[in-house]
Image (cartoon, rainbow, N blue to C red):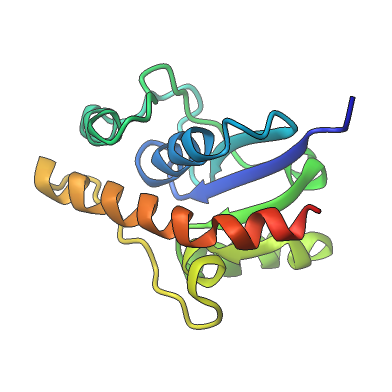
Length: 155
């Protein structure tokens, strides 16, 4: 049995964007059982659930994040990760500052999907259901665009 390849999606509170990214990564990588996909945040109320709007938006696109609970990114998570996917350039910068020994593992979702200069995923917190749907669509499309890149990194 091969060692799991851990991918971590990271945002601020781990209640909207990164749980949706985790759900979509699991959906699109389910045929690869050697991947372990989790999410975390950089400013977290540990144990908080995903927002109802994020749960609904992810569910509409076939990802179940209804049992998600927020967790803080940690040195242990960073050590076990093969890839850390930040939702914004600011998240990536924070991660590189706090975990400089793992900076080679950190990229934004936009960078993975489109190369350097990729777009940030906006925070929908407090937004309308339509705004959450739009962010969910964007995250899933970026993951689909990044899938080949991610798989190529782990051959």
